[in-house]
Length: 297
Image (cartoon, helix red, strand yellow):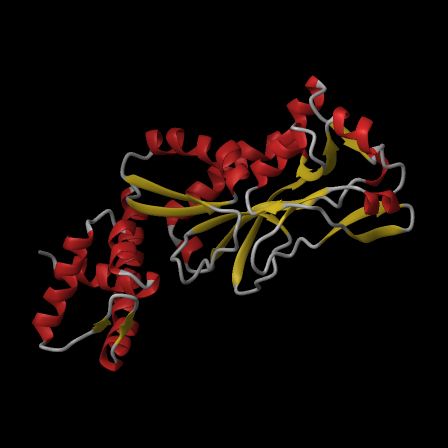
């Protein structure tokens, strides 16, 4: 059993707060992950983790050991990336994350052809509409729709993504068609919300410049695809990226609401820790994404 592999397991277990989660991230069973932690503890004759039925924490020495072990793993990954850049055959794992709908429609299709051209690379894609801690979750590249705020991360723009307000004709026939932004106050607005979500208002374009509209609705969700489904079913007005509803609009399943006052476009791009973008395989995937996705906008 490789000592370095055990170090990698220990680092991911600490970062994810669970032996099961750390093992799953490395494609190991909980039993195997637990045994690798025990091997490290037996090697040093010290307890690195405190385990209870509800919680896992590092001991004082375990926390100090984690800091050093993480640097060892990072240095090893950088060395492997350097070798890959000289050999012309990059190898290793790229961890990606993206919002659910964007990930399904735009990011997931990028992966098979990229891996076909680079057989030494594995891709692990995690999709979620919730905020992801890129550094703590060891993400190499995070696809992002909105306004990047973290200056500690490197932002690479792919395109501006237009947004539209949409509803079904059946909903508009029943509730009335908004003719100006203020009319949204009388409508069931379908909202993307979750703990610490920024979307408690919609910013619309007006002749006087961007205007924040406080909007409310009777139900919300943390899954953007559910918003589209609710709009299609006639339950209210949704604020969605244009690429997501282009076909629905063309088919007449959805109608654009307030076309003269579209929401501000969102920035579409990818975020990465500066160090990660120095890895040739991560930079290659970012280049691949920009090349394939930019023409779609």
